[in-house]
Image (cartoon, rainbow, N blue to C red; front, side, top):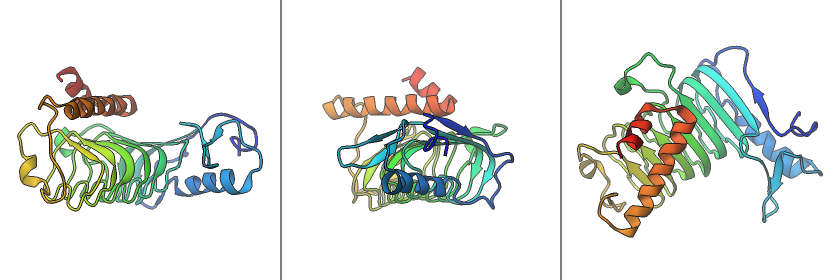
Length: 250
């Protein structure tokens, strides 16, 4: 209401208690409400909103910042919309960012865990997402970015079937991975840090093209710039030591 009625340009919300696994689809209703109010109810455009060439109204970047902690339930950040930032310190169950169309989802490590054991989110994150950015300062479960159709994400480890059925968008994984990488993938870009050369054995060779950043091609230069940009965004969002180490020792 402060954004819509009072004309403020930004607002920060902090729940008065940590999230637990009964708190499902955190931020989902807000994303839906923003879309409904801006494009179907309001006659006057709020100060924090814009209108694109198609006539769709949307909030400016980082207009609504929601800061949480604890152990969130399923579908944290589902339907995340333009202008929203969901900033969580702790863990999340399955379905993070499901159906997201814009905004940012940031999941930071609460600390107290070794990198190899730092699993922060569950399975099928970003299922069907069409936009927005997601930054995870730790590992995800299976099927990370399954059916991703436009979201950008950085994560620090995944399980089986990463980027399965992905059609668009870009993801960068800085940690471990396993079988079925890119199964049925038909579009977008998946960047993988692979110091041990394991990716060819895990990659779905019948559905994706594989390249490197070191073959001297124009394409390699373009993708190298993209990876550096993703690392910088990840550091800005999470302060990731792993991302800093890669940039410092490029």
